[in-house]
Structure formats: C-alpha cells, structure tokens
Image (cartoon, rainbow, N blue to C red):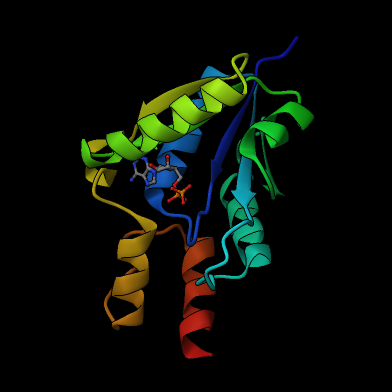
Length: 160
Ligand code: ADP
C-alpha cells in the first residue's frame, strides 16, 4: 500500500511557505495530494480554479504530487482519497493552538487518521497568505513571497 498523504488548506494564495511544506511532504510520502478546501463562505482572493492551476504549475516537478479540491469534512475527503495521513504546516507557536484543536477534533472523528506537522525553512516561517494578500492589495512587492505561477495570477487579480 503506498503511503498517501493529504495536505489540506485554503492556499489563498499559495506561498513559498506552502511550497516548502509540499516539498518536504513529497519526500516523506509516496504520494501527496494537495487539497484545496472550498467550504469558506468568505469571498476568496483568487478563485479556486486559479489556485488549482497555480499549485499544479508549482508542483509540476514533483511526479508524486497532485492537486485537488474538496468540500465538506476533511476526514471524509481523506477517507474517499484513501489516505490516513494529514499534513499541516507549523510556523510560530501561534499556529499551535489552532492546529492542535483541529487535529484533536479530527482524531475524535476519525481515529485511524494521523495528523503530521512539518516546519518550513526559517526564511519562510513568517509567510502567510494573509500577509501576501495585504501586501498585494496595498501595492507592495509581493513577488518575493509567492512562486511565479502565483505572481501572474495575483497581478491579473489586482489589475482587474
Ligand atoms: P488554512 O486556511 O486551512 O489554515 P492555509 O492555506 O492558510 O490553510 O495553510 C495550510 C497549512 O499550511 C496550514 O497548516 C498552515 O499552518 C500551513 N502553512 C502556511 N504557511 C506556512 C509557512 N510559511 N510555513 C509553514 N506552514 C505554513
């Protein structure tokens, strides 16, 4: 049985921090499914199709990584993808509380599924989609924070 892990998130937009976690997970597991959650009632910065395309372009070099979307409960998505490993990233200690609560809730709902935490390189540790959205909408240089396929799409979004 191949070890198939899921890396779920909003990826709105994907950043070098996400990519760092993806690279690490791709070396640890046989297959990695990057799964973009579409539950959010909030309006999104990049449409989900653009996030899928951008992540596919970013992951093109990894033969064992694919990108998909999911709605509804994450553990149900994991079960239907036949995966028992959830990958999440940790930045500063401030992420811990939120991630701990989600991991514990998921464990209660699906004891067979394990959450694994990975830590990005320190130069990516401050990066979040929120920071990128703020810098980009306020006219700052966001190109240092996101890979090229994401830069193009943010540019179009801002100029639209
Ligand atoms: P969500 O909206 O589900 O929190 P995000 O798209 O913001 O999803 O992030 C997905 C996962 O990636 C989360 O576990 C988050 O902590 C992690 N992550 C985001 N940015 C970084 C980073 N710079 N370093 C490490 N992990 C990160």
